[in-house]
Image (tube, rainbow, N blue to C red; front, side, top):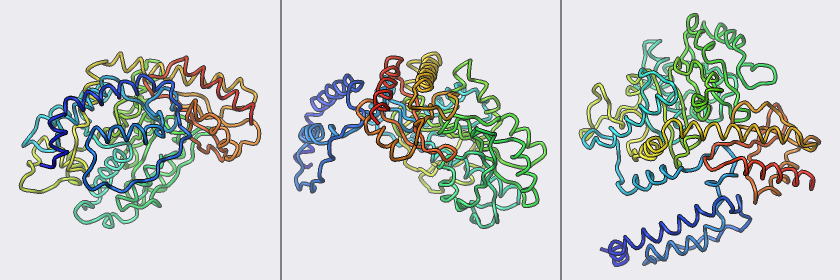
Length: 462
């Protein structure tokens, strides 16, 4: 054994204790750290021949790289839709790496059983029936990809062919209809061989990102001569957290043949709030669903789940035939359900946080984030230099400058805010804007007031 490797093996308890102590220090200070540090990124070093050992590598990381890392785990990182890591999820993630299981085969099936238990908890959390089967994947993009891959096979089933066996070309031209599809949807269509041009935008309601159901019905009527199609509905759009009328869309299947995929990456968590659960009414009627867990469940990257009512079609797409893999059977191994064969036990972090805090704990996180978003929206609405571009429907605040809202001026604004808060740019109805997305378990009203004060001061300086 290499001498440095042997030394680290023998000194592992001391190494882990050093990492534990330093991690505790980092997390104890994360709320006051610069959200996006201005320090320059270190120049790359060549790989050393002999290595330096784990303790020296830790010290070098602390000295060189930690100063430039963003505080994305902290309470004022509001860019994208980024959660943090609850204490229990952190413990679960450490144990995931400790055990280092590839939970993909029934030949070593305990990891798969733990995942199935966690899936059942999540299904209940989101109000889904047991007709929905779920699997962990790496994120919303992969969840949407898996759901649309199953939809692609359903299209083939309607036509008496199998794109999984014969290729996507056997389907001919495919229509995918959506009001405000997330960018991961055309990316998935590209990977699945359906092509980005198969996505046809459908008009949305005036001043909203929610699809106009009447316009959708018209689009379905026009597509009917070409055969069945796919509808991608939204439960929480990224820009404004808007929701399609899922029940009304599902009702259209009485007259038109289509697969209903719902992108509920963060919006599914509305089910936890009694005041907002109506937004996901009808979610259980979907044929496939995307939910991202490293957003509002506050587990570490990367973690998401996909649900579908047709696991048989899912295995038709993703089955992997090899002598060392288990058979499909009634409960297929995870290797037959997603693009991954290597499937880390990412369910464990979710298991830990769900077990530790239960439905009530995660409801409190969800409702606190919604309250913070509403409070910031109210503050912005009262600031002379800023204006809201949409109502605060859930946990996203979309706003811009009141005068001359150019991308350049917004970039200057976020540059002034970088030490206090991180926001991401967007464009809504042609207007350059900023988004504040609340999904971190650490964020409180105090942070919201601090963000509002920073926004007001920075706006005055522009």
